[in-house]
Length: 166
Image 1: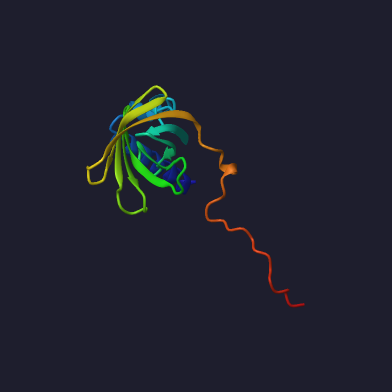
Image 2 (image 1 turned 90 degrees about the vertical axis):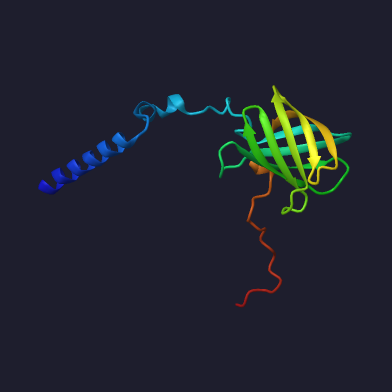
C-alpha cells in the first residue's frame, strides 16, 4: 500500500512539474482548438497539378514532406518526354518555393510562385539563372490512391526456376 501511494505521489509531482514548464498551459489544455486544420494548410494531402511551364504542358504530383513542417516534395514530367524531375521545397502562406533536380542530386532549377485559389502562378529559373519561364498550374485533384501505385520496397515474388528438393 505504501509503495502504491508513493508511486501515485511521484506521478502527481511529475505531472505538476511538466505542467509548470509549459510555456502556454491553456494551449496544452485544449490542443484540438489550436491544432491547424488540413483545410488551412495547402497540400496537407497529396495533390496533382496540371498546367504549363513556358510553352510546355506539364503534370506534377506533390505531397507533404513528413520530416519537415510546411515542406512538400514530389515530381513532375513534361508531356511528350520521358523521365521525371524531382521537386522539394517550402510553403510560406500562399508563397511556394521549390527546387528541382533532374538527376536526384544537383539542383537543376528553382520555382517561385504564389497560390491563388486552385492555381499557382510564378517563375521557373534554371540553376545558373540563364533561363526563366513563367508557369501556371491548376490543382486538378488529389494524387492517385496508394492502392493504384506499386508498393515501395516490396518486390514481386519470382517464380522458382529450380524445383525444390524432395
